[in-house]
Image 1 (tube, rainbow, N blue to C red):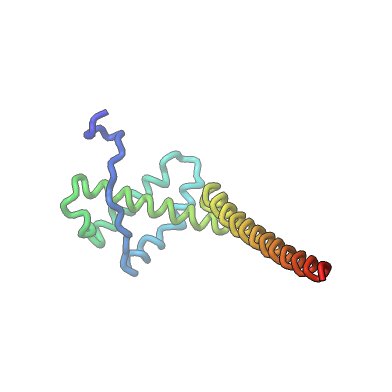
Image 2 (cartoon, rainbow, N blue to C red):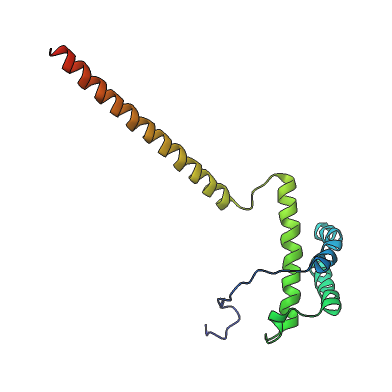
Length: 145
């Protein structure tokens, strides 16, 4: 595959996407309909809806400055808006269901907890061992007198 191949993922710098309060209000006002369409039986309906709202967003607010000299700026920005809808709905749904983002995150948290417990356990053991050694020495020194 060549570097011009669209299947090759190219490293792009990721900038935080900051929307104004007015832009966020616009996006959030369409979340319930997007979520309803994700639950529907028509394949691709939610994406089509999100891309239509992205076009409305562009006509209302214009393209962000970081897309001005980008190749295929409008389709890329529309895809970004679609991902915003998808990620926001998913995050909200996971929070409501009490599910973590991924098993990887769960395992990382468990690993961190286990490391903390193991460190506490080994610290407790070494403390116990050092107390035992001191007590043994003290007893031996008293028995020898």
